[in-house]
Structure formats: C-alpha cells, structure tokens
Amino acid sequence: MHIPVAKPMIGTEERDNVTRLLRSAMLSQGQYTGEFEKKLAAYVGTEFAVGTNSGTSALHIALLGLGAKSNTTVLTSALSFVATPNAISYTGAKPAFVDVGFEDLNISFEKLQETLEGLPDVVGVVPVHLMGVPADIYSILDWASAYELFVVEDSALALGTRYKTRMLGTIADAGIYSFYGSKTIVTGEGGMLVTNNEELNERMRLLRSHGQHPNHKYFHTTLGYSYQLSNLHAAVGIAQMEKIDEIVDRKRYVATILRKELLTMNNLSLFNEPEGSEITYFGCPFLVNKAENKHRVLSMLAEKNIETRPIFCVLPELCMYAENSVETKYPHALDISRRGFYISCAPTLTDLEIEYLIDSLMDVDQRID
Ligand SMILES: Cc1ncc(COP(=O)(O)O)c(C=O)c1O
Image (cartoon, rainbow, N blue to C red; front, side):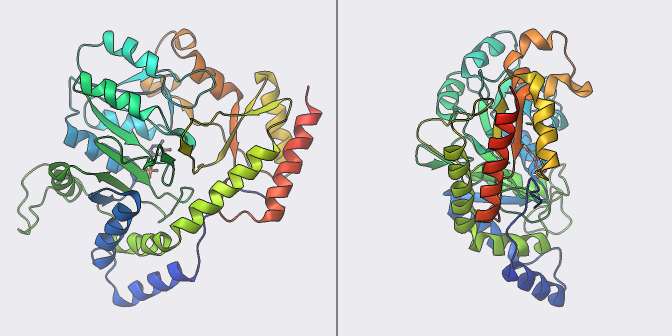
C-alpha cells in the first residue's frame, strides 16, 4: 500500500468538461470562469467571488485592494506556507510575524497586540487558518476594527471548514482559497478571492485582468496583473463544485476516524480543535511528543509507504525574512516545526487505507519511547 499526502477526487465530470472545452477551443475566456465564481460564492455564502490563477495571486490583489503598499506593515503568522508573506511583500509592504500559540497551529491573539505596539505603520492582518483549523478570527476581527486594520483570511487550506456557523474565508474583509492539486477542491493551479464588499470586488476584477476597463477593450485604468483563472481550469472547478459536499464529508469522516482511533497514543498527539468548529483538514496534523524522535517517526512511516510533510515553515527562519532571536521571538512556531508533521486526509482514502494508517501510526507510537 502507498499513501501519498494528497490524492484529489477526480471523475468523469471533470474529464467530460475538459473534453467539451477542448472541442470548443475556448480555453482562456468563456462561461466556466464566471459560473465557477458564482457556485463558489453560493457555497461559502458571500456576495462576490473573483477567480485567479493561484491562491497567491488572490492574496496579492486582496492586499493591494485593501491598502497594503510601500512603507506599511502587515501582521501575519510566523508559521505558514511562504506564499503568505510573499504576497504581502509583492505589494511593497513588510510582513511582521507573530508567534502561534502553544501547541496551536495559528496566530496567537495575545501576541498580536504586543507586535502591533512595536510598529508604527501597521495597516492590516492576515491570519492563516493553517491545515484548515480556524484561527481565532472573531477575536482578531473585533480587535482589528478597534485599530482600523483590514483583515484578510488566508484560507488557502481551509475551504469547507465552518467556524461558529460561518465558512472560513467569509468572516473578514476578504478571504482567499487555493485550488492547487492537494487542496479541498482542485483545478491544477487556481485560486479565488471572496468578499461581500462590492467596491473591493470591482477593484479585484480590474487588478486581476491587466487593469482593463470592464466594457472597454484595451483601455487600462490602473496597473493590473495577468492573474485570470482560465476557462480550462474553471471547467475542472465547476465539476469539483458538483461534488464539494461529498469531498468535504469524506475528508471530515477520515479526520474524525483517525482522531478518534489515535487519541490514546503515548508518543504522538493531536492538535486541539477550537470549540464550535467543523474542520475540513488539509492534511491530518500530529505532534511527536519529543522533538528528538521526529526523524525516527517519519522514517518508520516512510518504510510503511506513508508519505508525510512538515507543517510548513517558520517564516522568519527563511533567508528572505531572516530575523535575529527567532528562538526567543517565535518559540511556539519553532516547537511545532520541530515536532509536527502531517499525513493524508484525502477524500479518496478507502476504508482499508484508513485502517492501514491507524494500524501504522499505532505501531510507530509503540516502537518509540
Ligand atoms: C497557507 C497558504 N497560503 C497561500 C497558499 C498559496 O496558494 P497557491 O499555491 O494556490 O498559490 C498556500 C499554498 O499551499 C498556502 O498553504
């Protein structure tokens, strides 16, 4: 048996849509992009959705539209994929990192205030819902509004998670999703920005398509980008939207079973789930209780043909964002990166594969001390 970290649910609907589209030769522009946007907006419950060619480009234009620019600072989590601070940097703003909580995947609400106080030019916050687990978004929103900061939810990994009845990505000024091949729904590459702000929606549409006036071909009113979501990618997205409930249900089922059966391990532990959350995990994350055992755990899982990945990066350790005193400033993010890993939570995992994952993790847990 081989268990890759991701395997999307692709079927005849995707193949039929793509074949039909190839016959029509409408690869770049066409009806699918707008249809996909409407379906995703309806699914998450926002008024507007703007398709882009990646989650990173959606985040970039959302930040631009909300006012990130040179000589400003945007707060974000110290633990994420590099696309989060990169999108901030593309606007000319500087990312300022905030540690996560103890054994918590997400930005520490307490640390936000502390970080803000040391910086004069903060204009916004990008909380990341890492692995699909909700950040403390309602508290962050209340706090940010007191300081007139914008909030963009980086929900690249969190499409389908509900938190206190609302979908992640729809709670703040704007949210973004990614459709890269390992995400909840996939289009190969692709992303979407969602918002209830009409002005932002219009600005996003301009920015994603060369700044071109919507009714005036080759009349460009602002410096825009070539960030369109192609009709071809959207054709796959439309088919994925038809099965999003099935995908989300199955991902939740996989995580629920894994978490239930693996709750009593001695050397590996699970992350807590915030109260009121119904999580659609990107992958199933674990913590090895002792950092010195992590390498052995991952090797044993690799021997069993179970792929693992680290829980992304401690961003201020990367050369582009390097800071001094990372150990003292971001102890919790460092702790998770030293002890954390994830395995598949794919909607395509069979019952037999789920059983194999459980048996393998239990076996590994018993063989380490
Ligand atoms: C937290 C986070 N933000 C943003 C992105 C960027 O998404 P994309 O790969 O579609 O550009 C990713 C991609 O994995 C991510 O994990």
